[in-house]
Length: 444
Image 1 (cartoon, one colour):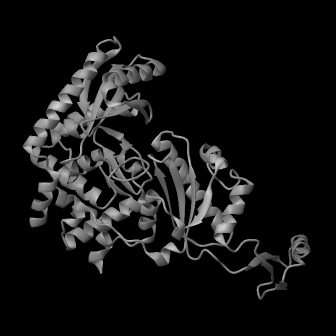
Image 2 (cartoon, helix red, strand yellow):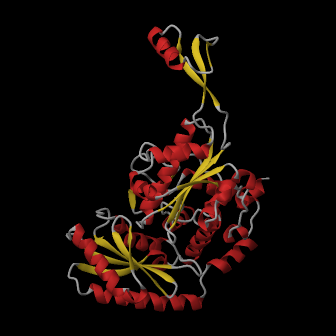
């Protein structure tokens, strides 16, 4: 297929690039090994991730260096050793702490992101931290995928990136690099993965699970049958993958690998309400999780208030430390009169109480089913004013996660979609309000 040949040219690293990265990787590895040698608790230091597996993409590489520590080491000491080695070895490259299950150190060397990650030196299956599986993943992929299949992984990764669902972190809730590798391991090639995906069913199971998993896709880790790699993938992104696979097979295009910019739909933008605030820095996974839960809570509150929510999303800008919850409504303004359902007339006590409480409403009557109904004026029929009042009164009662309440207490703004000026929020608004023509275009 001609399109795949084009895709390979922009996906597979050149020999020159491979040599350059090999020199960088080995130099950085030596720096970490030199520092690690000062600690008797360290068993070994090794390269991991896509570079070690040979599945990294042209022009885009993160280097993962794993510091394997004796399994008897206490957690606090384990974390401290990992940070000390990371900071000392990367001191020339402005290192800083990142957090996952355990803290690790990140730096940037020659425009390449470098992660120095501690993990325990354990036997397979005896995991003490999430990072412990990494070296086993590397060995498995090196054993099971030849050079041709590794390039198929690269095609799949580039495709996932082109349709904006590549990344297992909570910000994306998409398909991570290891997921792409395991899919190629299971199906053999990029095209075969897409052909399978085009016919996936709800709760699709790939692999041999030891128990029942509840997720949109169940993809079993080949080195750990108790682990479902699909847990990190949202139902939305699983659905986008299926539609994109069908679209590509129907009408192959290099655009699926390069991505396609969407334009904002101004008609839909009029119906968006944004709650934005600045936050104090914390782990990306933490703040993303909090803002996403906040978005879900606000959508629920608006629905209780009589508003119809079509879509919701969240955005976190790690550079400006600005976050926002975005809500697309059927309409930001609804009727100022609402219908209130009362009890059956035969429930004497409840009926009397309902009549007493609603006697001053605009209208009260018994319907054809013998229920008492009432018409009353809404306190709020403008979504923006509804949220402003709700959030000013009590953030916790509004369902806002406790972790971002201090941030929002300092300051927050409720604005309309058309009032947004922030680049990151604007980008999120485009995704929220526009049809993805790349995925849905070929189905027209």
